[in-house]
Image (cartoon, rainbow, N blue to C red; front, side, top):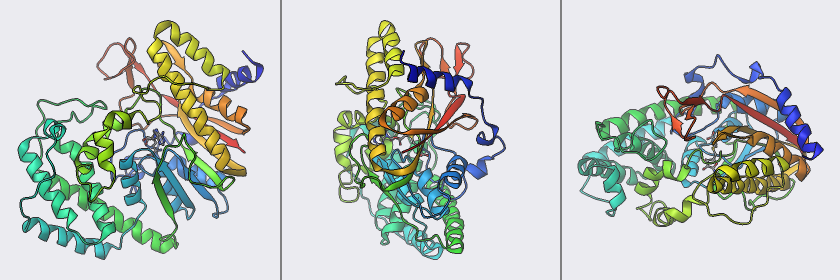
Length: 436
Ligand SMILES: C[S@@+](CC[C@H](N)C(=O)[O-])C[C@H]1O[C@@H](n2cnc3c(N)ncnc32)[C@H](O)[C@@H]1O
């Protein structure tokens, strides 16, 4: 293997986990502070990582921060709290809805009025239904669909646009609880024994917790003078040119998707299915549900993508693919596609970052069919070959993941603690810090 690639492998081998980055003593209420608990989202950051990176690499407060895999907006929320302007991207329209809600503090008095408006709408609601859809009927029972429709149309009548979005975000969050979806599963799986809760009760409980969180967030931002600090989110494919001028971003903080780990489109299909049927409210969303198979191919790391011209520009990646090809050709093709997409992404962030600006990429390694998929080392090599300069590689212990940390040794699939063939995954992750 080429010397520079060997040096990267050697550097990573020498790394010891850094306790100052493990946040061992952080409690759930701290990771869920501010607006971070508005909506579940797989593989989200713990906000403390972002806070620490902002402090270290955006010291003046004037910096513009970008997260091109913005997810549910952790980076943008933390940027706003710290008074830095931020911009986020994600291919997933649900990510945009959640993030926009989370970075938009609403005057608490207005929100209370909108809650009353919602209750009036609910009391006086007429029978209204969204267009029928067989997949909605698959996931929800008929009585629940009626109750959800009643909540949905009571939200739709709220006049204030920001508040309406806030209520829709709460609605999107409860869809999983109210469906037949097996709650802990990251795959679309029916739970035959699930007791469906009372829709209105679940909705109001979650809404009220969001209202409380908004109040604290709003008051803190007023006090710090950061209420109007811009934080904008777009739905975009980050492997393609982003609508940002070259050399304009001071700091990128991001955590890319992993290969064949989460199918984000599948995971958010309940919200897409429900909201996507209302073209007047959620413009363009119907495309994602009607052409769902095409939509899910756009996510990096998906196994739905067909093989295409791959160019990952990494000796380390090449070795991984060669090893995998002997064992499982289709899987090798998925991983090759992943590394290829990641190279495109790194090339785009190289373009948008200022000279002297930093990129912090938080990424973990995994094993597929017995082959180690050392994403972090590949990412480091790809970035260096694009012209980035190494600042630091940090290894951190992962203590707080929403999902099961176990995979089955034989199938490579996520599994539970009780499976004797379980193997710990994502025990560590890396923060790759590079400078342009
Ligand atoms: C690990 S998650 C990021 C989570 C985020 N750090 C947070 O705290 O919420 C990766 C994200 O990448 C997004 N993604 C996948 N493929 C993408 C693409 N081609 N362009 C932009 N975003 C993409 C997924 O939708 C997902 O939200």
